[in-house]
Image (cartoon, rainbow, N blue to C red; front, side, top):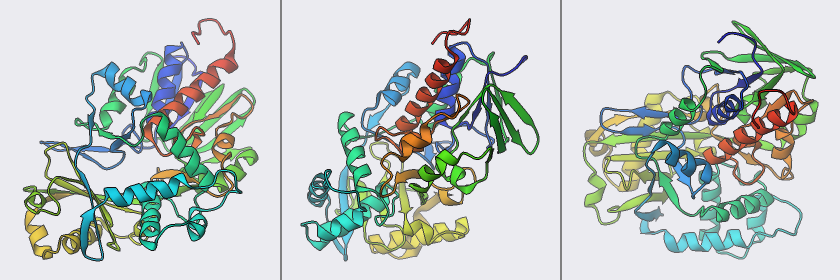
Length: 431
């Protein structure tokens, strides 16, 4: 692409791609810098000869227009998750729906008018039996990838209200792979106005009003404005140095945290669990296994796959392990849960996949959550600096959709619109 760049977009995840699409459609010239050798960020789909394996985002939570609109535009199928919720606690099998309804009631009773506190602190005084409280703790640590002793009750209330607005109790999946959204978004970026530079890990952002200079180990890029879309974990790691330092962002970064997650999809030769009455027709399985407590099937898709999910302290316990060690741990956990010999699981196993998001240098965690006292932290992190630096990515979503793909898309749109508004009536722009 010839000529100067108007806007630098740091990060080629779905937020960065969304911003690039909006800006190029408006007539601006964009350079997008991505540290990986692929686009998509925490959307990571591995395609086999027969089906796709999600190693990052997998479920569409509710019916957000950001995803359903893009899917409709690109002709991408979205199907509802089907099947029963099962649980196995203390070697006893049961349906999970009744317990989940009690957990939901516990969430509904969280006090909005009291000073903020952690979810664990709230549970200490909540009126519920120990079984319900323990499942609630597992849910917060598993679904939100959050430390119950740190996560803000006020933020959980905000998120729950936001989910209600989009039918958030429904779950969907994309049969052709979540990366279909990445392809759809990137294909709608005007390539004549956008240069994408891959394998370009940004290390420094120098800025002053009206000018941003972004450096990697190999090159230097200049523009009037820059949109920073890297994950919260990368910002907190100081892998990117801002000069001058962004002192106004420090308090926000301290009040937001990145949840650790390790996921292990196991592909089998058959759906052997369908032959057992306790697991036939299962979609999700919640257990008290100390290593991989949560599992799910590919329902309604016919793939013979079970995915093991370790979040929070379960993921931290796997830190530094090799992929072979993590797969072994998952196989042993599944054998214990299903009460079969590990050799039986091994014989059925056709392939295994792993992604440890806490060990991913370009993510440093799976997705963000809000700590006690941080209800305004995402808004502070999202605020532009000197009409020069702008911020996007799921951690900057202050509307209750942090940690989600649709939340990330919304922030990309928001940051791009902020850039366009800052440019006013520049000739040639369509805002």
